[in-house]
Length: 474
Ligand code: SF4
Ligand code: SF4
Image 1 (cartoon, rainbow, N blue to C red):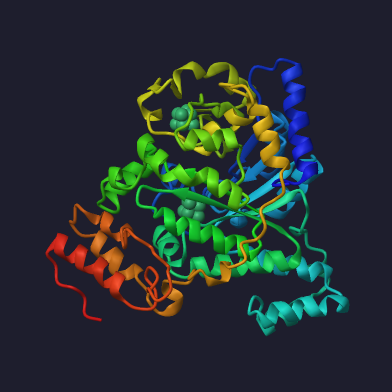
Image 2 (cartoon, protein in one colour):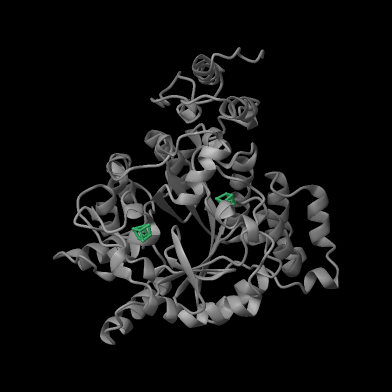
């Protein structure tokens, strides 16, 4: 099965119960943002920009748990900001599990290993020494950290921690292989840390998923390589969604990076072109999301937005109408359901009801539509059932051949040059993300940003030509 049976049953029961009760609108996944503080400043992130004036605010633990009770979504995606910065993250996870919910911790991965060491300290016994030694051997834990785990004192051993569970996923943000990912998150070394964290998580028995946003300049071939690599690493599933040009990210792009948002975000037509392979990927890899949503992304059908099924709760309340767009915040989920005129949003039969929705095909607006039978077509239920109950695709055997580390970790750091160039007056700054239009990883050819400097030099040459500035000396 692509998604574990117990979790599938829980979600199916939730849908059936509401369908039988004829509930017009109900929550499937709660996007819970206990804070918006983040240790990164990713290029396409609207959150840290939209909520820049309340980055220090946090939703109290009790309020987070109440919000989950109120909307009663079977799944809670704890996001942010970076949720591992939330001081009560462990208590939040334990509290949500106490409510019987499926939990995704959407993280940039940077603090994951610390949280897993905390977990190990609480359960360590000499019988776990081989596992700890393996983590040391694979350089996922240092000798000093291992010693700290072995010698944990009573306080460390009694700490509330995030323990492995079949009801819990680490959901790690990965937007490409090393070069691209580090460029998008605007910090070198993050991809490497994510990979280390995912490896450690799998060794310790956690479930790991990844989430990927596809931008206009995302290289589709690179994404496929990334899935091969992640699959080989043992990642349990992947969410993939088109990047959307919501207001906050758009403004930031112009102001901070001096770039044109249309160079970066996808239109509907471009989304369909980028996602042309999604159904094939769905067969090769464990892509989460319904096949109906995949058909929508590939341009084979229309869906109507069901943003109310994935509500967002944060420091300002229930955010309406959706995760991306903000026309208001409400005190209660049911109040939001009642007061928002949902007919004003989305795209119906190709016509945008709100111009801001025109290019949106994001997972949080349309994936539930596939599961809830909106725009139902004959055979959809069977299609969804077959997709989930079919055997899970095997880990990609040759994933270790993927040249995943094609950036900073092999000494080809690129961020400083790229940033320096982008910060200037260049109108065609998109070249930064257009390192190479053809990633052929066939034998003998250097990978993107890889063993030689050709592509980086090309990039810098393009930037330089566009800006008429001299190249930095090597
Ligand atoms: S890690 Fe997430 S919350 Fe932080 S800046 Fe990046 S996209 Fe935004
Ligand atoms: S289509 Fe739906 S999810 Fe997308 S921006 Fe509009 S309301 Fe939000």
